[in-house]
Image (cartoon, rainbow, N blue to C red; front, side, top):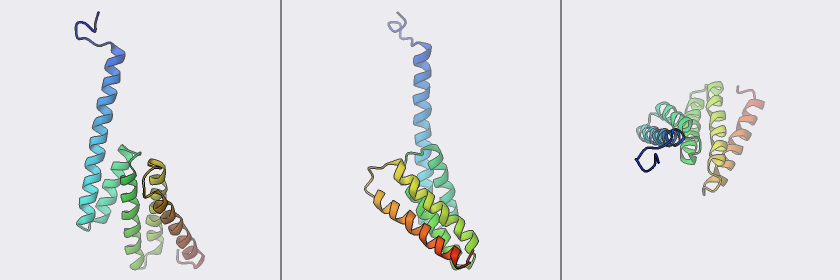
Length: 136
């Protein structure tokens, strides 16, 4: 009878509320992702990393957000390494490898999965050699 009057049951209301919250989170994740892209294009890499972090927190199944976070961390790590701060650079390189791994789990069907796996492995190998050389 409640459906005939246009009312929905309490469980249906919670279900709809959950869907609405989920959609809002996805919109927020997309906005953060776009902010990250804009920051990267402007050369503000640390700001981009923060935005991509927010995007992946809100939508952990976004391959593109994880991929972008990984690339930003890798780039910043390389820049910091160029300044001679190997310990700090290593932190960003580790985060880059982790983010590439997360990208592969976020969407295993994405065409860039093989690249993400290769990038993660390469970063780990290079960082391992640098550690053995005593750079950090």
